[in-house]
Image (cartoon, rainbow, N blue to C red; front, side, top):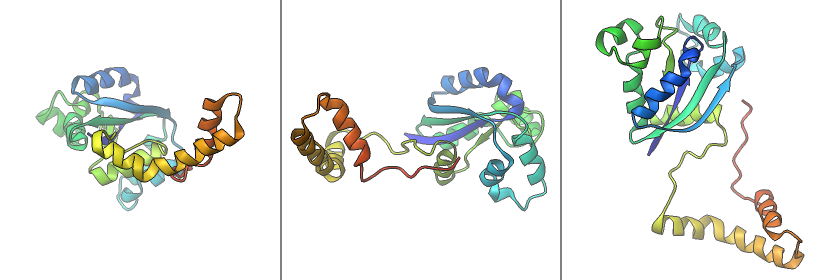
Length: 194
């Protein structure tokens, strides 16, 4: 299952519920969602690749004009499927070629085209981390892959934690172990500043 980032832009936020229904109907799972009002600096960072384009200033002003809804979507070939559901970037082209697309139905101009979608798996990972720095982007493992992962990454830390648990003998061992594992996790995610 691939993940991609979807953003419902300020001009379509009133239609967020209807857009979410379209997303679910198309077979996506909404993994996470977050409503946010972007600062100018955040919008400029997110759209940095467009900095030298003539529409950059209008885009930043628009994306900071009201709240957006950022979502992590999951589905087989999610990037491609989401871009298909969005329709062309140009609202006029979307109306003409894909009248049932999100941009055709809710977009009002090429800048205010209702929603954003990552253009590649690499962009999706970067963009998802921008809005959701703690999200797990990798698939859930099962069978031998899960056993190998536990052997390679979990067992050593868990054994150390259980040994400390036996030495400490806390009143609430489950909570104690959970706290110990959180504090001693050698693979803690790097926290973002968004």
